[in-house]
Amino acid sequence: MRITAGMKILWMTWSVGVLATLAVVLVYPAAGFAQEAPRFFLSNFEGKRFDSRKHMGPYVVSFFFVNCPPCVKEMPELQELMEQHLPGVPLLFIDPLKEDTRESIKEFVRKLNVSLAYVYHDAFGRVGKKFNGGKTFREFPTIIAVQDNSVVFRLVGSQEFDDQLRRKFIDLKP
Image (cartoon, rainbow, N blue to C red; front, top):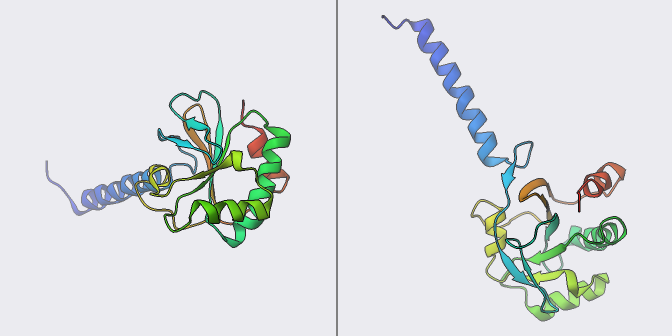
């Protein structure tokens, strides 16, 4: 069989389409494609350990850092939303930066009136890297919802907690 120029173009077009689809799946897995949630454990500021391997229900992770401007608004709103509508669903505010000390984190969340029961320090960023394809987080805040051991949604940057966004959280099934 002889390969014509038209067949080469068709093959190249198909290949580019397949590669583009793979890139979307690998780079943006939470944007419509299921991504398995990583396994990790971490202790909060009150000494209580969260172990994703043993937790069977949904949970929400929010990555922040001390003095993150959008986090100042988002953290109290997210805490209130979770306490009102999903009181049994764990909320983990995780600071993945080594530069932030336990004391500076405590002071920051105290000013925001956020409970230390929700606050975790991952000084080496291990948990963040697991959720971010092995890379250190660069965009804050990043909120990730997990259900049935899969990432359900990922929100990056400042968010307005309007009715539509609140519904995404409320739809998590405890």
